Length: 265
Image (cartoon, rainbow, N blue to C red; front, side, top):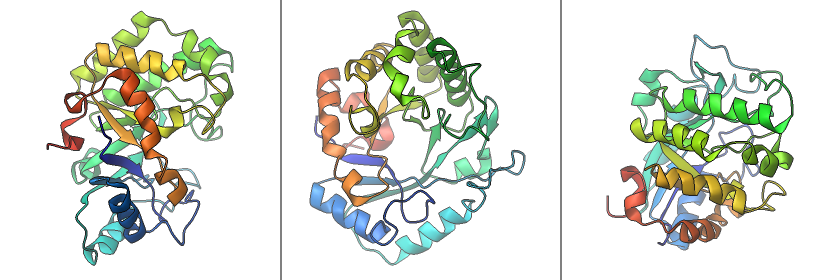
């Protein structure tokens, strides 16, 4: 299956953007056309929930991100299908950085359930032991897929702040635990992102077999998928085709994708 969508791209509006001069909607869409990508999902970081105060890092990234992006897009002409969404976050199970009202106003919400590197903001596992991190991942994931907010889970089971232990962490999660968690995701119609972060050497020193194991279990549980470069720079956007190694190994077809991103949609 050829990958024709990228649902996870950050623009200059995200604080962590690595190239604020070149990571504009215009440049992103031009590069998508060059790459033969027909659907782009803009997914800048957003924290906009008065009931759950943001961190200092998130505070400037409020719902105005969406307004400014839409203003940028008005003047652009492109053959690429444009989806306006966000990467939302959670502070702890049940504590989300986006409201149902804002989520309903967007084409998609990528919900991050593993930003454990934000140690002074996001709830932390009991310890850095692999099984404790694994339990934490499972709790966040279940809360995320049952929240009613998520279209797809951003970089699922990729615990930022603990990437160097990914193989050991995932090894402590049984097939049964994964099957139960992915079954819940499937029941709620929430997709799983296949991200360039799963490729060894891009975000961490781990085995390709580790993400392949849980993605295979997710497919067996009936989950659907989205693909995303998680690009903060043009170079990262260009890495999207590398996901073919995962897509092919999983034997995915268009029917395995969320309807939102199917080429035939």
